[in-house]
Length: 178
Image 1: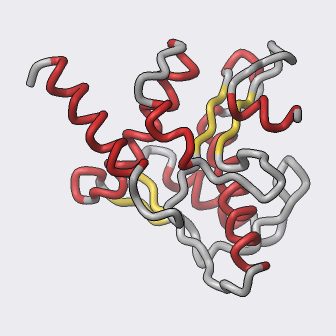
Image 2: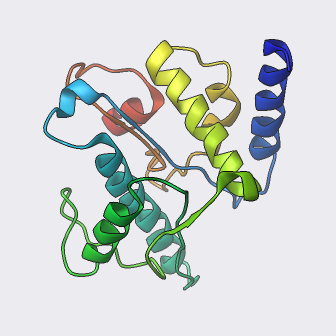
């Protein structure tokens, strides 16, 4: 497939997400690795995403929707580590002080080739990566409105973990400043 065809597929998939149900929300976490030299970026992002997903589920719970969440991840060499971190959420607090209370179980791991939802998540991750790594917003702008936004106006579904630019103007940082 040509580069243009591949880019067209990415755009098509992200457009489907952007036009999907209002209840469909996205979550992503961009980690500036040099800001967290003593942390594993995968573990940091996983903990952050679980925390943000839990906030979303708490918001639903406050409206009477008592469902619990399930995290499904692409198969990974870090499967055992991530499952243990998720188990620890039941007894320990996250590094940000909150407890994760709304997950139904530890994460499930599936082969992305067998799951369309994991493939969509891969596209969201790629769009977020391109936005933060290369300042390329071509894909990110298609889905930026799908990141979970709380009643407070803060985009809780997107995190930009970095310590180098206190004046960052990305949408994740900007909504936390206002």
